Length: 111
Length: 114
Image (cartoon, rainbow over all chains, first blue to last red):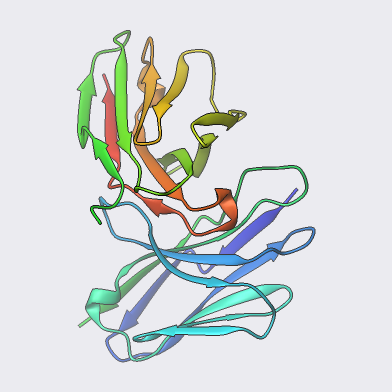
């Protein structure tokens, strides 16, 4: 059974204080990893897809990286508008059609 | 592109009543997903359609839940009869190719069953 674990569950940062969110996974044959951002009262919004170990993608203050066991979402000099819940997910493996989502990291950036 | 459109945004109903949630996926996407999100269980996949055909409904909690996709631009999720434990936020999402490509989510329907 595929498993995705995100840590920490919650993170409070001061504006400008860089940090990283972790997404560790156990799957039988990784076929990619997705990062989403979810604001309160809204649906998850797609951020990145990573396909292979060593791959990196950037968008504004966010950079996602992937290893064979985990992915990191690095947030550089965050701003209050970066406050959200960040979810990672892996596509299904084997005969399943069901992606596996982590429980998310709730990020609050204080001004 | 208007994105995935869900209606209603909020629904409050009494226990035992029928509830119908609606979704319009992104044009050109061949896959549609219904998810339920709660604090206790996070994001759970209820059912997955590919080319309007239900492929995996193993996440549907019980027979009170049913979903249809009569055409490529419309899907419904129905709960009959509704129960307080069905209270949650229900999301519809669509993608270009199943769960192997990124999904685009609607704004969700917050369902409260009293």
